[in-house]
Image 1 (cartoon, rainbow, N blue to C red):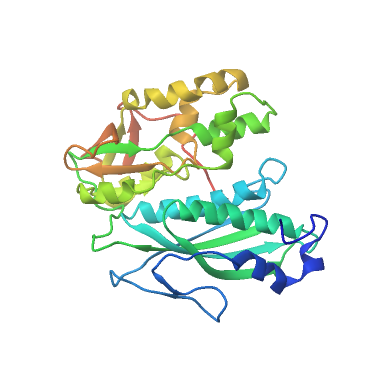
Image 2: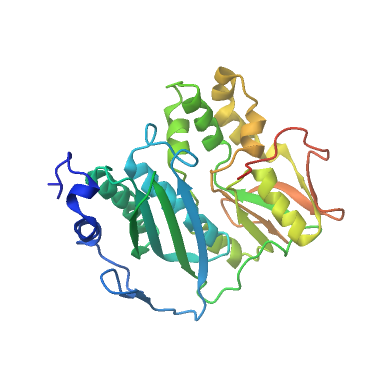
Length: 318
C-alpha cells in the first residue's frame, strides 16, 4: 500500500514526512557507512580516489511529465549521471539527489520518482545516500554521482593517438528518434519512444574498455559527432567516423525517420541522450564493442567517411 493518499500533495504531507517515506526500507550497498538521516552520509573509499560528476534535469527542458511517468524521470536522472562515471572507467557507487517541485505536486509522484532512481541505481549495485527536497516553480532534479576506479587509471578524453581505433558500445540514434515521435504525436515505434524516456547505458563496459587499454572515452550525451569532437579537441587529433560500422543503428531508426520526414543519419550521428560509450583503442576493442572509425594525424576535427558532415552535429544547452 502507498504511504500517501493519491490526492495528498507534498504541501499536505510536509517535507519531513515525504523524506521519511523516500528513505524508509532502502538497503544501501556495503560501501555506505552512514546513509540518509544524519547531517551527511559517509562512504568508504576502497581505491582512495573518488570519481565525481553532477547533472541537472529541468522539467520542460529535459523531460515532460505529460510524456514521462515519475518513475521514468527517476531512472533517466540516475542513468545519465552513471554514464559519466562509466566513461571514466569507474563504477558508480552512490548518488546524492536534490529535488525541487511545486507545493501541489502529489506526494505519490515524489515516491514514484524515488522508486525509479532506486531501481536504476540498484541495477549497478549503487545506492542513493542523501540529498535535499525544496519547493520550486517546476520539477528540477540535481544528481551527483560518486564512483570507484578500483585501482584503474581514469580514462580521459585527451589520450587518443593517431592509429587508434574508434569503437562504440551501446545503441545510437534511438533517443533522438523517440523524441521526434513524441513531438509529432506518433504512437508507433514504442521501443524508440521508450528509449527517449529512459536511456540504457552499457553498465560495466566503461571498466571493460579501461581494462582493454582505452586511450580516451566519453559517453554519447550530446550526439556522437559532438562528443567525439570533445575527444578530438582534447587529444589534438582528427577522428574519421566510418558509417559502415553504424548501419545497425541506421536500420533501427530508418522506419521512424521515414514517418516523420527525418534523416536517420541525423539521428545516429547527431542525436543525444543515448548514453552509449565511445572510446579509442590502440588495438582491437573488447568483445561487444563495434569499430566505427580511426584516429588520424591532422587538425582537431571529426570527419564522416573522410569528409565534412554538413548536418547538425549535436545538442546545444544554450
